[in-house]
Image 1: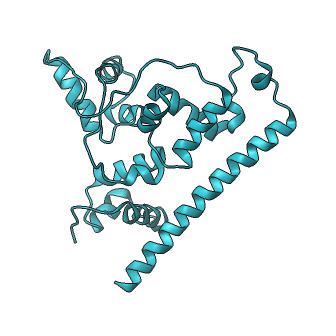
Image 2: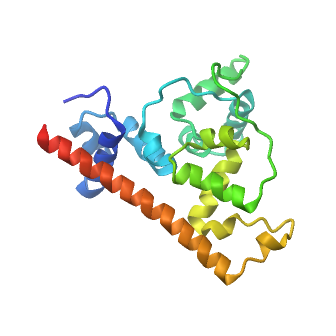
Length: 224
């Protein structure tokens, strides 16, 4: 049966069920009344933003003029497809990137999206602890890169870069060796161990929350 809307928990349950089904994505999406591209976007947003990425946007999302131009120029320079750029820059839908490219090609002016505070593009100098706080704001508290940029007054790319670095190399990867400050570049083995414990605690909490969401959804489905 076709559905116009799914809750974030329902989307999560469908994504997990799809991973275990062994079916092609198009087949699975069709069986559940979901457009293949829509289902693909759920997967991309969940991988990028966690459960937060599966929630419906409650208001218009602001995109600055500078961000739109960066995406347009990246596309024209062959740096990726619309899907690639949507994932890289945190767009909810790659169609947005296509619209901006079309506008640029038609000599129409790109302006900032209205109704929301503009995300700063400057690269703010931060401490090691502040970078960890940004990562945990996204991973532990389920905020998007855009929300993190607004909250900490940093650039979108900084927020995204730190989260990906921490994911690949742990909190230790957030050390900035350019300044050669003792408190950052000379971490002791005990410091590194404590950072790893802190990160594992965050990851464990995230896993437990996802499992709780899935169990709650299954309970509701059984009752229904």
